[in-house]
Image 1 (cartoon, rainbow, N blue to C red):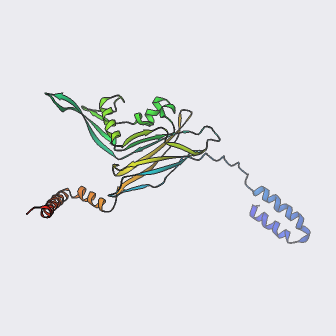
Image 2 (image 1 turned 135 degrees about the horizontal axis):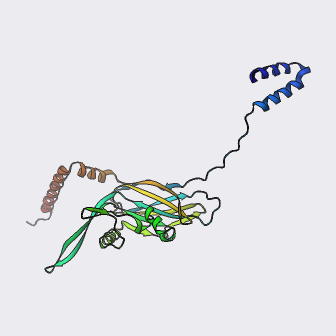
Image 3 (image 1 turned 90 degrees about the horizontal axis):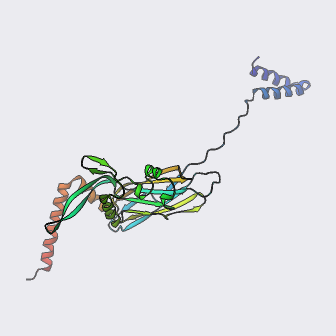
Length: 279
């Protein structure tokens, strides 16, 4: 007999007062038989790394002189592990190619004698951490994860080969000095602070000379000299209003942009001549 038919007979029997108690006992027994076995619920997994930016877009106008973006992060719950994990925040701007020249004295003049091309190098590079990355993990792990300023790869073209040379390479050092003098490359080992046991913040400075494009904000956590979590957010730096219109025209119509610039310069010179000429 099926469970549905047995349940129907028990309900019919329950309609008679004399059979009420046996019927109720039968319904209870049937419920125990039909109920599925209770399974143990698995323990909840620890939450992953959660990241957020104070604003995801920086707009550049004619009066733009720089901005600051605040990164907030919540580390995974490590079941009360103390101290909190180490944090390395790496911000990379759009990739560009650069050429570094080496000068030498020839016939009493300083001239360019050798060059080195850097391919797909970040136009902006900021490394922020709560302490020096060299103290967070072994050197191989840091190089593999590009955690730390000196561990970021800068691919060079050396003759017909492409490689990331040693940190002490003179061309690499010269390239870094130029970018650091422009305020586009820097490292700050005390820029990440914990405002709660599992919550940290870091201020990302965007200089007035920052190139436009999409930036990658990468965050990596280290615990006991091992990588335990990572995350990434995009950050957009864009021109707006008149500046964006001029930039778009220069990129899409370079001939007409150059012609308009030349005519504008001639017009300004003509007006200045009329205004300041002496009769």
